[in-house]
Image 1 (tube, one colour):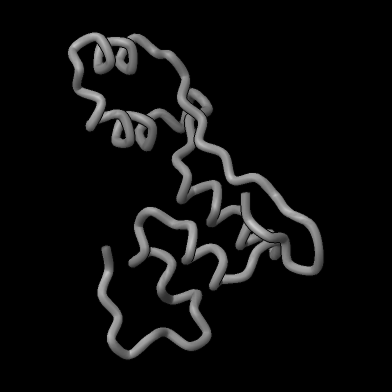
Image 2 (image 1 turned 60 degrees about the vertical axis):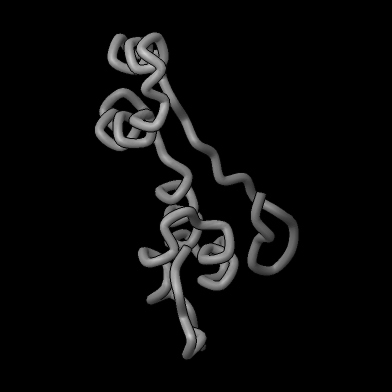
Amino acid sequence: VLFRSGEGRCPALEVMIATPAVRNLIRENKTHQLASSMQTGKKYGMQVLDDAIMDLYNRGWVSGEDAYAKANEKSRFRPLLKNPPQDFTEA
């Protein structure tokens, strides 16, 4: 949940569909590969968290700073910051 620009909050949602590929990854205990499978599964309606956050930012619902704070892949959101820190290191 991110604070909405103006007032209120808005959800950023990850969506995973139980496709045969996803089921196989879970069955084989390869859960570390699920994010990659979700990225390639957009045609099935899957969505990773960072894509949801970017969509909220593009709609003007959240600030670049809030998007960056909640993102998993910080480098993707760094250009959105108005005043990026000088000693920037990504986790």
